[in-house]
Amino acid sequence: MDATRPEIWRYPQVKKATGLSRTTIWRQCRKGRFPQAVKISSQLVGCRSSEVMAWLDALPRAGRTPMN
Image (cartoon, rainbow, N blue to C red):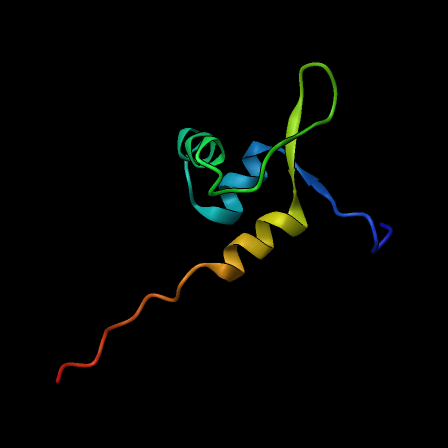
């Protein structure tokens, strides 16, 4: 695959990569908190893999806060 063109992931791949349900992905997209879907054909949509991975990388790390 051409490195300059991101792969388009359909929802099963996005769900697997993020651990989110389809409904949660849809809601987050509507709120502008998740990469917007791109239209593949008249009935198919997907997400750019590079945008999904960048979104994942931008999430805060889980961890304990030090107790004072």
